[in-house]
Image: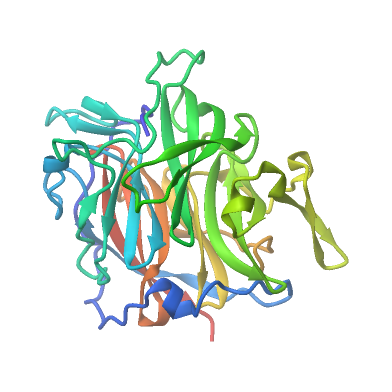
Length: 388
């Protein structure tokens, strides 16, 4: 995301004292969990996440010196990298992307600007990084092309500067990506949105269509999302943990039945509005939504952890990345645990998980992380430590 931040330099290094890698047993997402996780509404289970160990920077995924040749796709600098699985492919959705960058440039800047691009992979071994299989869509030159291009208006709050993908999900063979229309980039960690909406692809990402509906107001708590397929009371839904624009809001929760017709129907979405006698209350009015996590939550990711038998959420806050566990989708959520220290990786943001990329029964998690200084996306791993 094109935000000014204090100067920082990425350090391609492993955290000191990390033990040698253990043997991997990579679990593929839908397979490892046997399908969508089932929502257990019991809030009385204990917290079990004790901490995180073995933080390792494995590889740089994009830009100069990356393990992928992104120069041929005109990707010299980009960020974000949320992941969506469909069949044997995993799609990575990147934000503002630049094809030309001065070697001394810093942050989101350069030439050949596209508001968003996407790479895909069939690499199912995350232990040495992720190798891309291609980009979708691409133009006649083989350059990564925007899924839905932003207007690139002036940064004055009067138009649309860019369209930033916040996360994707799939319904059958259809890909969806949630994006926010940014009207103004402000101080570090602050920006304004016109609205949040969805774009759709029915041909494995080769072409995309921005949908007229659904859309959420730019001043709402539903601008950046972390979607997960779940089974709830015998029905399949997509749950979305959501935050407002910027990095200074708490997390709300909404859901929609996991069908294309429902996903594209604004009235099919309902919003978590609290618990009544232990039963979650879902309202069709977004103004009734209650926060499930307080705080200043930056770009977030959520998945079910088989290892912990709990929900886990990753996000950035005040320059560091954190992980926390939830007993139910709406909580209680435990206190945050430090995942990546900003003192070791200045300018970090957007730690994104994918249940396809875990090992050791889910104890080891892999995730993308953006570093503002080089303005590119990196691949990390860490081990979860749980109570007996």
